[in-house]
Length: 377
Ligand SMILES: [Fe+2]
Image (cartoon, rainbow, N blue to C red; front, side, top):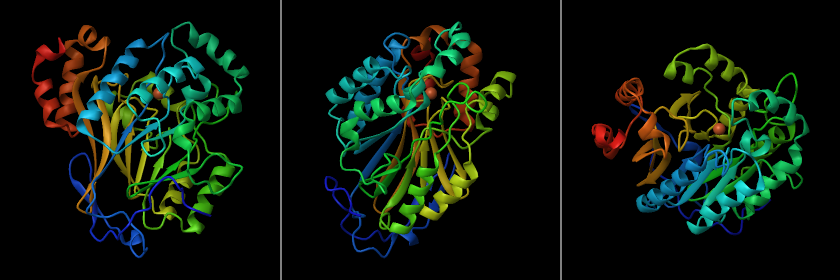
C-alpha cells in the first residue's frame, strides 16, 4: 500500500487540540489518535476545506443554478480556499451534457485537478430525477431502465481529474477512495443504492455495498489514515428528523424522509468511529446544517444553491490554523438566482428570520444583508 504520489504528505506533528464549533458553541475535539506519526501537516500552516453539495445543474430544468454556481465559485475565489469538496447531486439529470457544463465551470475556475477538487456521486448523478409534476408519474417507470454501473462510470469519467492519485484499499473497487489534502484524509464513498421496486423505487434511498464496508475495514487495519484527520464524504444524510424540526412535520416531509433514507446507518457510524473520523460531510437534504452524532461532527451542504428556505448562496468550511480546525457554515450575501426576489413572501421572510436567530451561525455580512429588505424584495 502506498500513499498518493501527487499529494504532499504532511510534514510535522500536530500538537495542539482541534476544536470544532457547533452551531452555537465550540466543541473541542482531542487529537490523541492523530499524534505519534512521524509525518504530519504542519500546525503552522493554514488550510481551508470548503464543502458544497446538491448543485443540481441542469441546462434544461435549472438554468438559474448554473449562474448561482458560477457566483458561488467567484465568491469562494475571493474568500480563498485550498480544496473544494462536492458531495453529490452535482447535476440534476445525470446526463453527459450537464456534466460537461459543470466541467467547463470548474475548469475556468482552475479547480479541475485532484489537489483542488474531490467529488462523490449523488442519486441525481446516477438516476436523474423528476423535474416537473408530470414526471412524478413517469419517473418510477423510466428509472427501471437506468444502467447504474454505466452512469456511475460516466460520473467517474466526467470528473476523472479529481480522482487522480487517490488511494484505494482494493484495486477492483472504485469506492472507497482516500485523498490526502492538507491535514485531512478525505474518504470518498458511494452511498447511492441500486434501484429496487420495494426498497428504492425512486433511487433516492442510500446504501453502501458490502465491498465498501470491507474497504473501510481495510483502511482501519492498514493504518494509512494515521497522522491525518479522517473526513467522510458521501451524499446521504444521517439525521432523520432534522428537516422535520426545521420546516414543520407535515405529511410530504414524512413521505420524503421515507424515500431519502440511508440504510445501515448505525453500522456505518460504528465503522466511522473505529476509523477515528472527525467530520462527515454530506448533502441530499437541501439546506445547510451542522449536527453531532456519537461524537462525530456532521455538516450538510445541500443548501448551497438550491431549495433552501434561506435562499442565499452558502458553503461549509473546515478551517485549520494554529493547530485548530473549525467547522462552520458561511452564508454569502448573494441570493439564489431567479427565484429569490420574486418568490419570497412575508411568511418566508419570517421563517428565514427565525431560522437565522435560532439555529445557524451566520457570517456578519449576511446578517447585514438580511437586515436590509431591499436586498430581498
Ligand atoms: Fe439533491
